[in-house]
Length: 255
Image 1 (cartoon, rainbow, N blue to C red):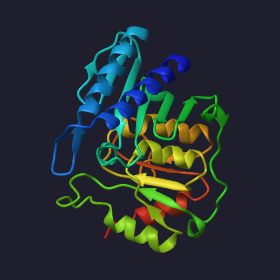
Image 2: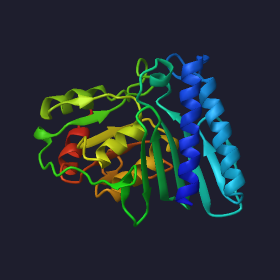
Image 3: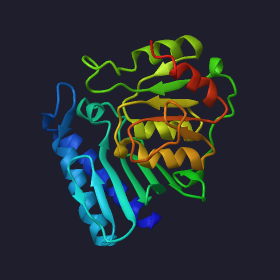
């Protein structure tokens, strides 16, 4: 299952690179919420291949795929996580495939085709980057940590804009980056390159696969208020585990 699904993610990455080279057609789902012809081509390919290889599995995709399965398995897919980056030619985006059994993520694959990095995790078997085992950082203090986060597409109008948390965490850490792909951000935490990541106003396809990569690399994943993480939910706080409670305390300050 891992081998077949990984090959699908890798092939979708080739589609994205070819589309980027040929030129991208951009449409707007919202003021700053973009979708491209590459998103649709990638999702169409992924759905077709998943149905061929796993015909009993359900599929939930960002660009509209809604397929009821006949088993307990559900693929949650993002054909391009980081579409705005992709549309600008900024090489930080990914193909994300998460497999749920019930509400538990059992397989996660996140592939960045621009630097040929493919993160893979199977529940109970560890997390890997291009076949090499990865683990989270050993950082124990938020003050010495490097973090990342993201902002909602409706940042200009919503009160849930993450700006207060961004301000406060910048003051108590070594810095907060905003890189533009939640799936990849989670994997950077898993690989020990970053110590923590949080974001609100997300979707299941942004976080399902990457959340498993973090936990299988030894990290901790919850909601931003510390409650149990839900792969079919809309927020995530992921860390190396060592700084988790300290980060949650900062995120709890909302005014």
